[in-house]
Image (cartoon, rainbow, N blue to C red; front, side, top):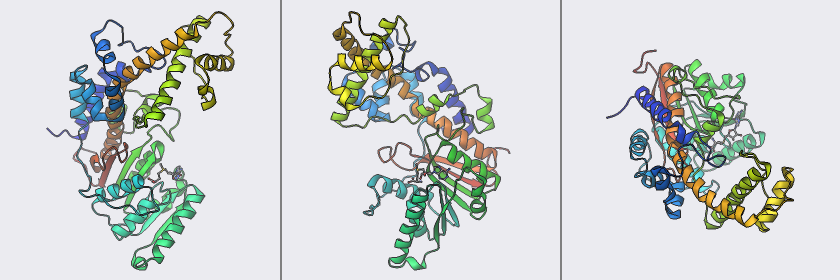
Length: 408
Ligand SMILES: C[S@@+](CC[C@H](N)C(=O)[O-])C[C@H]1O[C@@H](n2cnc3c(N)ncnc32)[C@H](O)[C@@H]1O
């Protein structure tokens, strides 16, 4: 049964609230309360093989398969609530030489998901306006692209001029990249002149600003794909919709950041380095708790690769010096190194349960935005515009002004 956005949001709120102990914890810093040694859940999760863990870290589907027998009810709910319509084009579109393949695929998939564009169009936080140029050509509409980095503005305009010198380009409507900090009122002079605004991966506060300003100006259509929900916000995260404000679910910025925690797609060498570093950090963590006589996590500084080339003991002495901890007494470094390795395996498995709720959390954040748009009289479609291997930030929202099904 297809849920409307309000019901969908409500069910996600309930899923997240009921399972908060799995996703609000930070296993690297402290063993989660659910992970007591005797519990059948802990034993089931700890018995997952390394290969299963690696696969689950790289893909949401593999993650659900890995945890299905450990948390069947939650996995079924996550599957059901994270299933979305797919706005992806049927055919892949070839990349030109000057744009990286993945970025080009994002642009063409996003562009195709729009289906039509009447223009004049505004591209929000455009970078070099690769998307704007594609839309200008594909939908034959004029484009104003806004970007705050002067160098990107210049390069975007140069690319637009170069494109217009090539065959047929002269007949196309205008494309200009304008220098503008969209977080200021300066965006108004551009926003007020367009029918349709698009934004591909404008981070957190940047796309939220588009939503508030475009709804205030009653822009006819908004299409965007959000990312990095925690960026460009004030110190706290506030839901945008009335429905969001009415829930009891309050998120810290760290939790909001959790919605985009990247899956590990690293190769073998990178993975081995990560494993060594993290297990050494965990080994040092066990050591510092004992030496200081305090059972609490101590944040440690970033480490250069030189520090990792030495022994575990060298690593601990380097860390101890930074944190002004004495390693003068009798310390069994081998035992702490072994503890770190065991903890690493456990933490990686505990993290999977946290990860299970990453996509529901991301969808919750986006549905809050969708409800905000609906509360402001827009009709919204929410789906995906590409597969997650092109970009894991693949949610796509298309909003059209006019009374939504919900009452204003
Ligand atoms: C993640 S990039 C996305 C760029 C482009 N939409 C794309 O998908 O390739 C975000 C862009 O927003 C720009 N940006 C950041 N803050 C901005 C602001 N206050 N006003 C306008 N642009 C901003 C950055 O310089 C960057 O080019």
